Every structure is written in C-alpha cells, then in structure tokens.
Image (cartoon, rainbow, N blue to C red; front, side):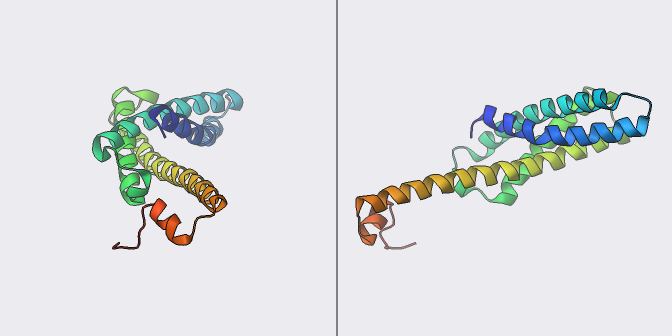
Length: 164
C-alpha cells in the first residue's frame, strides 16, 4: 500500500468521525446550521486523515525500511501510527487549527489525532494483510490447478521442510 493509498484510506476512515464531531459541535453551539458544520468537520477530518496517512507512511518507511506487512507486529505498526498521529496533532496545535494553541483543547486535538493514528495504522495493516491473504489463496488455487504434489508445492513456495 503506497503513501497516497494510505492517505486516502485514512481520509475515508476519518471523515465519518468528523461528521460525528461536527454534529456534536453543532448541537453544543446551537443556533447554527447543523449541515454546514457537519460538512466542514467532514472536510477537515478528511484532510487531516490524508495528511496523517502521509506522515505515517513516511514514519513507517524511515523506521521499518523494506519490511513486508507480514513481518510487522500489529502493536508496533499501531505505535508508528500513534507517532504519526502525534506529529499531525502537534502540527495542528502549532498551526492553531480550531484556534487551539497550547491549551487543554490543543491537548485534546493532539491526543485524539494520536489515537486516530494508532487505530488507522492498525486498520491499514489489517486491510493489507487481508489483501495479501486473498492473493496467497488465489496463488494456492493456481498451484492446485497445476497438479503439483504436496512436496512439490512446499518446495515451490520455499518450504522444503528442512528447518523452521
């Protein structure tokens, strides 16, 4: 999954959360058009998700190099996502998005982006692994069609039975 794909996946995941936050904000403020507030928060969270996915992808490539998804643990992947979310939240606070700055609201923004980053990373890994599993199953079906013996299939897949 490339950087742009991670960013788009995160944007799609964060947009509905923005809708919920926008709804809560609109109801709390009162007297404002709910639809307008919700749409603004959907757009804000989608953009933040896009940027957050890009930051995470950069952090992941710098820290994990060329490891495959099946070589990464879910907790470690989520930790890198949390770091990416924290960086995003820190940038948002420093840029005074929503007028936050270094305030309790700024801490909420940074904390929320950290949690969203960890959750999004875990979801990205689960999605990537499910895609890899489907591709492996499809490859396995092709091998069965060729009519290889079990031993030949193990050798072809690099599992000769000698050692771990």
